[in-house]
Amino acid sequence: MGQMLRRLHEVNQLDCAGVKRQSVLKCEGFPDLASLPPELGLTVLSYLNPTDLCLASCVWGHLGNDEFLWQGLCKGQWGYTSVYRRARNIPNFSFKRLFLLLDEASLTFNGEPYEGMNYLFEHEILDDDPEEIARFLHTTKKLWPVRKRQFLDGRRDVLENLVKLQNFQGQFLPNALRKFFTEFSAPTQRGNYLTEVIEKFSQQFVACNPQIGLSQDTVFMLCFSLIMLSVDLASPHVKNKMSKREFIKNTCRAAGEVSNDLAGHLYDNIYLAGHVAPSSHCEV
Image 1 (cartoon, rainbow, N blue to C red):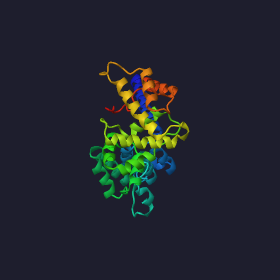
Image 2 (cartoon, one colour; image 1 turned 180 degrees about the horizontal axis):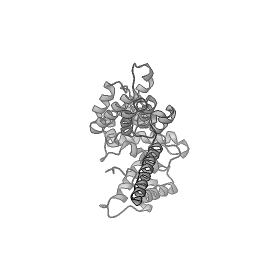
Image 3 (spheres, helix red, strand yellow; image 1 turned 180 degrees about the vertical axis):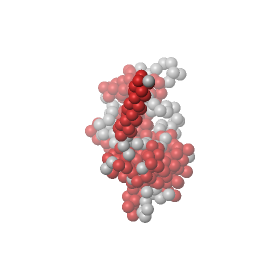
Image 4 (spheres, rainbow, N blue to C red; image 1 turned 45 degrees about the horizontal axis):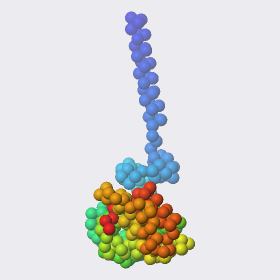
């Protein structure tokens, strides 16, 4: 009988300890954001992506729908839109709603560029102005480069303004071309669009680097030489690759402003770093 009473006492003690441990664990769990100072709760939620923030707003509606959080998400993914300038004057304006509209517009653009752009115009998010459109395209990574190319092929006025926003200061020509084609997506065939793009690139490159002592026409010629060299060295179908000596000879013969050393450095860059348009090789 005494042993049984002792055993029951031990079981009661274990049960009490277990309840106590559960209470401690509950106290040590993640605190309710609503119980924290608002600035601390907003800081925690600022680390969430849009999907998680939408879910969080179902629990912490006031914090999850905070305008500053959604404004940061909007400007973090779409650096510029026309509506940012007039948001304060729009009654009941919501950055959360704007984010959803911009996301829908981007998905539409990546399916059909002109429909996506018209969606932005119709919802008064972006003005149908070449400079405004160029700034929008320049400050977002949500749009596929190949779709941007399709859009710019029909809106050369936007293309001109977009090229002017590029900064190639202090960059070596092949590296500047790679950066350029990363954003613009090189066409797969030589044509009027590629020629115009290279012309505008050459103009902007010389404007950013006046100290290089090369004319716009020379840079234009070098760009096509680098594209053809890239195809030559990268294509498995080309058996007889152009040698460094041949490239230097041909380049210097075509452009008297180009020194042997510069032509050699250009060749070495393509040989070591690869194609100037790695995402979509040009066929010229």
